[in-house]
Length: 160
Image (cartoon, rainbow, N blue to C red; front, top):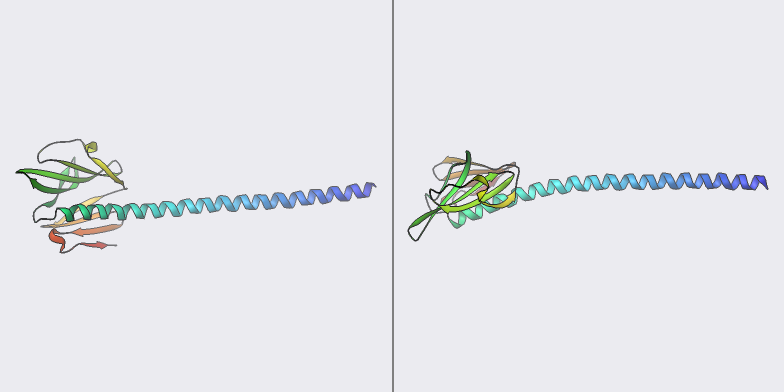
């Protein structure tokens, strides 16, 4: 009878070792899959925010793309996009700028001063750059994507 008990206890230990190895393997595969999913999701989200930011800037400029209404100037020490519009004899600025990891929009009367966080948060991006290439031609860069803007839409295109 001793032999039967020893045989069953060895069988039980062997089954427990196989089950433990299987459970550990499943746990490792799940952890690896979760890490890969998180990385792919982060990369996808970054690209989505870049496209959203460029689409936002393009839409704002198309709504106000009269000649001489769009230019790049400094706002709190950094380049920002200024869109000037006239309403009831008063001039207003829509200022699009990057601050604290966000794209902000600030609508104000021309000449008024506001702190950098005084606008409305639009979308979170790592960086946003504006460069006036020539009269009326503005290059907007978000991450590795760029957009060329010009009055009346004559040269608008996405680069990269």
